[in-house]
Image (cartoon, rainbow, N blue to C red; front, top):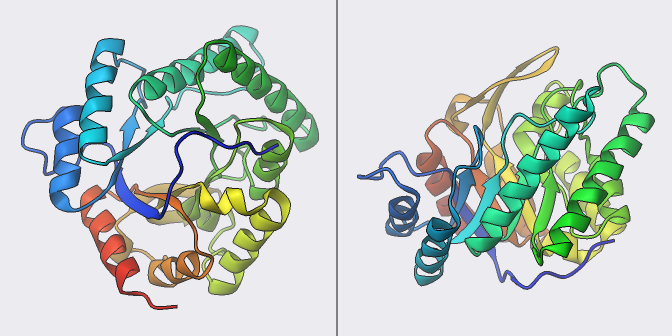
Length: 286
């Protein structure tokens, strides 16, 4: 049930997962200015350990981001499991997603990403139904508060985590305000080294377009990094040039499909790889 949002994107933007490492004074506002100085055009606010952004600062961030034409996204806290057995943990998880969305909305942002939960050795279909119900309630609460923002369950890096491509596409078909965050490094790790060829990426993007329409490719929230993985999936992120990710080929496929939205670098050298990807992307002719 894809719906249009107010912010319309005219291109694929590149940015950092958090404040660039090279920022002289580490603050969100200074980070936005540094992103612009570097020649990038997006930044992901990292709420990974909690949503500690006050509304008045969010409004200042909005002004700075708009002044410098920086698109803002946010990563909700890691402590989220919408399939937890304890009801209190589910409600706390929902609260963290709602707070992240509210603060990002106040900051003029576009899209909030989160890891939805774990299977906990339960049938995937049952887990899907539970997680869908909780996200539906999150969306209703946000709509009641006038918060219009993309809600993005992420394609996760381990088979024990909820969030393969088909689950996320189905959620996007059935719920308003929902589209996936496609983490290509996670797809690569989750599938133990697969999802690393032009053919596989064409299949992924073609499936999204077929199931969700062109709007899904015009509003993509993407994470790219190198990744270390094993039999159980993701271990840790790596810099692109220290990994087996065929990232240059991936950028070519994104251009081939005329993808719009944002690519966030989650490599350890966040701005280094963001700049590397943007430079390569601009050079690609298709």
